[in-house]
Image 1: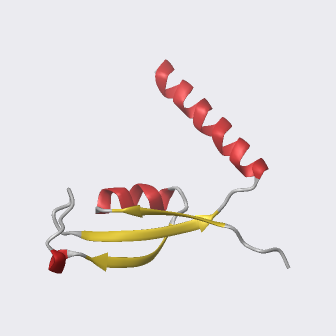
Image 2: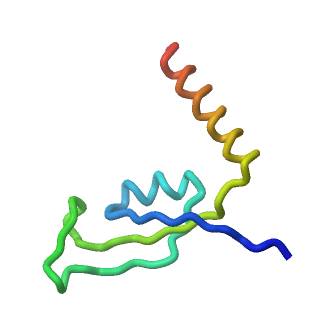
Length: 77
């Protein structure tokens, strides 16, 4: 059985969550920091923790090539 490898990140507002969800990130936890007085630019103080499987070398290269091609296409328009 192949062992899964994960990568992790965190977000502090819903705009970031929307973008990360489109990139394949999955929300796994939310912590509220309002009690401690810590606030982020979102204004609510929540921190969202996400994970996704680490892409294989093949998937990583393909994603990089796709992103480069999309950036070139947008620059040409």
